[in-house]
Image 1: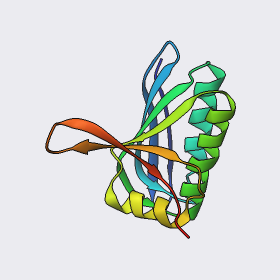
Image 2: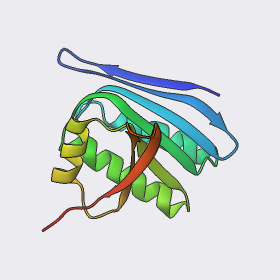
Image 3: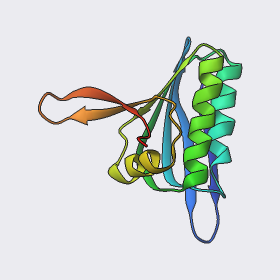
Image 4: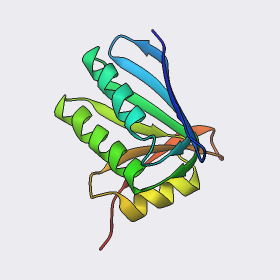
Length: 132
């Protein structure tokens, strides 16, 4: 089952696709600008996945070009909903601009972020934590 949601205005476009969903797992691809005018699409697709009992959700952010505080808060809120449903939300292929936004705006929620390791071709993981 694939789902696609998109939003567009004069300034930005966001596309959110559920590319693979099987069993309790889902792979979501987010592309474009995740901001106050479009971030609710991410929340909506996460909610759809949870309603289908998909508790392991991998969200590929490699094509996100812009993310503002509302986009970050939307992902953090989705992370909390997935955890409350005893699931896991993994942020994958996170570009530097998105990593910086999470380090600046994310609460101390321990988001799991996966990124490619050039040396081994494998994925490495880190947790986003705000330092005070």
